[in-house]
Amino acid sequence: MVDFVGCGPGAPDLITVRAREALERAEVVVYSGSLVPEGILAMCGGARMHDASGMVREEITRILADGARAGLRTVRLHDGDPSIYGAVREQVDALAAEGIESRIVPGVTSFLAAAAALGTQLTLPGVTQTIILTRVERRTEVPERERVRSLASHGATMVFYLSVHLLETIVAESLAGGYAPTTPAAVVYRASWDDERVVKGTLEDIARLAREAGITRTAIVIVGDAVAPSSYEFSRLYDASFGHGYRRART
Image (tube, rainbow, N blue to C red; front, side, top):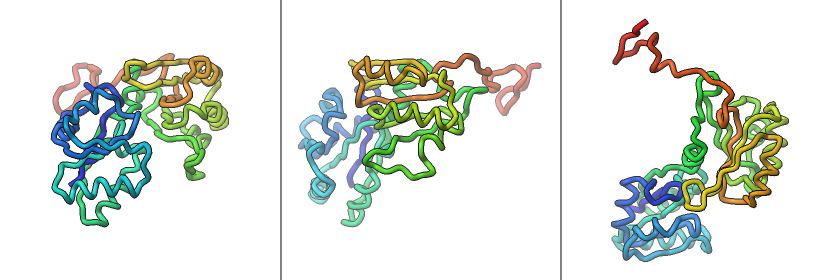
């Protein structure tokens, strides 16, 4: 058995209990280089540590497979959540081809830590009920139907991973897709880390503001009215006129 463990956005106290227990028991750990903070690596105790940042796919798989076959508690430690841009599918399949089972331990993904840093709610009644998670095409292709201008036509909250270095493209494509120039936008650098930085603006100026802040990587970009809403509706769930299985309507 190999555990694929999400370490969360960065802050050691945002790792899940299950993930921490897996690290404390681990005897072999392959981790995602500089993306995992020292405070979380320290939870691994006396495990044999392998930095995956300089490895290719086959080397990572070999370490994981060898550890599992030797009966050692083996962990592949990912930043954030393994299922969000984590290349976990190909690793799980490679191990399965060798008869080795896997378990995925979810982590708090970084867009949630970014929303917390902004002190906002990304799904607001009367504003949007949809969050789109995506990235801008560069070396990794994006299907034509998922291009930014197409997704932007929904007017939902858009969250961009691995794309802050292409912020000008995000802005241009978001505008082409229908967002107004005054649409709120934010860049959150290393959400929940000690050196976290938050830049807020609109599609008109967010690229300049992020550039002036020197943010070119390891950041989440969020676009949409929910970032800084001018107005919104209250939740019906807690409205006196709204009844449900645990409370009768009072008016």
